[in-house]
Length: 333
Image (cartoon, rainbow, N blue to C red; front, side, top):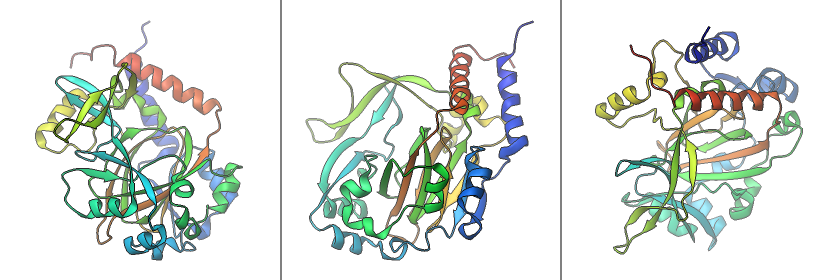
């Protein structure tokens, strides 16, 4: 008897939600958490959580204005990503070909970065270096934060990297997953996460895309230029927030299993100032941000090494099934 892989994956999606994940991301006050409860109820189950009041002890929550950061940082230079539209590390269609687009990377004085962030938006800059950037590039600010002791105890290790993210509403992070346990702390503004568990890899329609990077052309404008020698990476092609009705209709045709009303909707997590999102390893996430009344959006994330256990094997199987599934034509009807 032939196996209907698509039907089995749909059933897996529904069962995962019904048995454990549910349809919303829970919110728990930090005062009600300790390392045992956090590990037992969330880490061991690979289940996301928003922790409120988690940063009440951080001076950064009150202190990190643009003026304060400039005063602390002085003449220091930082790594900055620059794109025409704020969509670094995402799939871009160019002349009928899908490219995985890397940003132009620049090392600039922190004063110049903030001036561009608050000035004209002909190009979008984002401090998004994932190189342990808080201690490595923003060292003078490190005294304003501490790691989350109960999380470090639950994971059984100190963070492998602590990164600082500073940007505007224009910066968007495309769907992807990380091989880390992620504690994502919002200091200023709001982060809007769209989440799917590892079992739902097939809903993101990953494709192998040639890598390209934004570079300056002869006229000084940013231009997407394919890497030489050629290099390819698999990447999710779904954009959960199409910019127009026309783009929405095109996405519904190209990605029917993402938009399928008979499947559970992706989870949404809105994380505000002083809150922390536990983003489990291997979960797919798309991120938007809103500065609101703040000058910009600022966040700190702690990456803890994940355990490469049976969970990683299950996720790899889901990825392989997704690639195989979408190499076949969709059934009629």
